[in-house]
Amino acid sequence: MLTKGLPLSRGERIVLANTLASPSAALTANCIVFHLSGAALFLYLSVAASSGAFCGLLGARLVSRLAPVIKMESAYGISTKKGVST
Image 1 (spheres, rainbow, N blue to C red):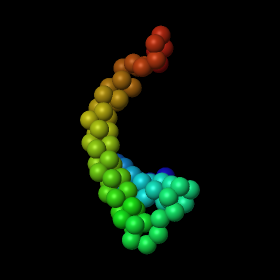
Image 2 (cartoon, one colour):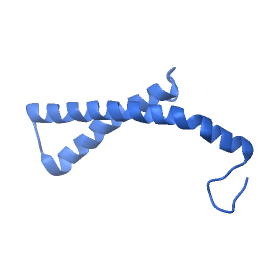
Image 3 (cartoon, helix red, strand yellow):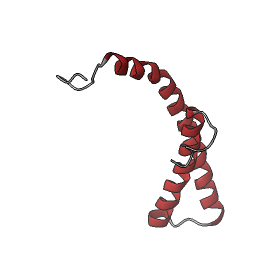
């Protein structure tokens, strides 16, 4: 939702969302469990952001490969649920 108004491709929005979400989750985990500060916290958040960006790239690639399959299923009314057709 945050990236919807930006002139970015779907893949770029996925990478940006993951890059922001991972440090947010790491910061929450730090507040609840780890209580790191200073350089250790900075390193922890940097690794989380890098990991989020890398996984975002993988996710964007997966979405781009699955998009034609999903569109084809929608066009032919194929449902993934057993016994249901649209």
